[in-house]
Each structure stands twice: as C-alpha cells, then as structure tokens.
Length: 221
Figure 1 (cartoon, rainbow, N blue to C red):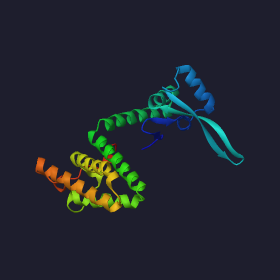
Figure 2: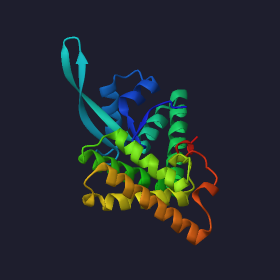
Figure 3: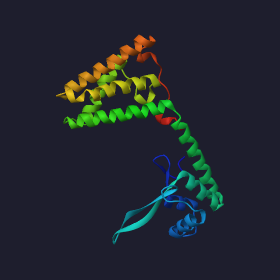
Figure 4: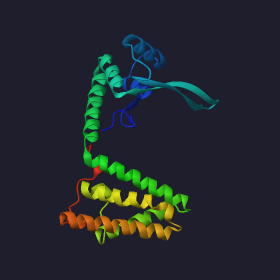
C-alpha cells in the first residue's frame, strides 16, 4: 500500500511527508528548522525548487523540496510519534524493494528492451509513422519469434528478453537503409527470425517452449 508517493524510485515530496506526519508546525518553519538542526545538505539530501500554484486570484510561486529516501526516513524518525514510525517503516521497506529491483538482472534486461523499443518507436515516427504503426510492426515480429501467438514481454524468460532486445537493436541499426515502413516491418521480422534460429541452434530450444515467468512489473509485490 502506498502511504506516501515515492517519485522516480527514490524521491519524496516534502509537503506530502509533512501532511502525512500531521505536524502542527507550518511547512516552511518545519522544513527550515530540520535542515538547520540536522545539517541536511542541498544537492545531497534534498533539492529545492519553486512550483507555480494556481489560485482563484491567479498563480503564485511556492517553495518546495524533493527529499531523498534517507532524509525522509530521518525526518519521519525525529517526529517520534506513531505517524513518524509508520512512515519510517514504509521508507525502509521501499529502500529494500529498490535494492532488490536493482539487483534483478531480468528487470534490468527488460528495461533495456523497453529503451530499444522506445528508440524504434521514435525512428518510426521520424519516418512519418505513429504509435499504431510501431505496435503493428513489433507485433508481427513477435509472432515470427514465437511462430504464432506471442507472449507479452513482461512475462518472458531473461534469454527471450535479451533476444528480443538484440533483434530490435538490429532493426534500429539498419533504419537509415529503409525507405518505407514496409521495409522496417520486413527487417524487424527477419531479425526476430534470426534470433529465433540462433536460440534453437545454440540451446535446442524455441521461444514457445520456455514457460512464462512472473510479470516483471509485479516483482515488487
């Protein structure tokens, strides 16, 4: 359960934390006192920025802070109340989850594949195509890879994720040679056939013979 939103995997909005902790001090005083008392360093423990807040009378500028998980954990601890202890336990669990995900090689391979797919999408858009063209081109290649109905990338064995990434990167490398989206589609299918053949040649296995794994997006549950 998400008690306090964690942004970009390791940042906490100071105002959201202040609200959760139910501090009786106004936010600016609370933040200023804690930075001074515990000698938190800007750029290391937190980042300050201004946000435009819309009001009935117009927009106004507000001073806000993005905290590291470590700083958020310390601020929760020094509140010395039930809310503070609850927030601290929550941040500790979030840190542990983040460490597990960073150590997960299958997740890292999946993120690399996602980056290759994003690059392919941009290449297709530069050729005058759109997201639907990308989805169709990639789906047809995945069908070749699986010789039929493909699994979702989130459920693939790490070897298949890496194979998909390799095939997609080859398509990206060849992109300057294409004059039409049809050529992109044919090359993408050919690259997936090549990695399918390579997998069979070196392991004796085909993509469809490897069972689905747990959805990579649910590994932190």
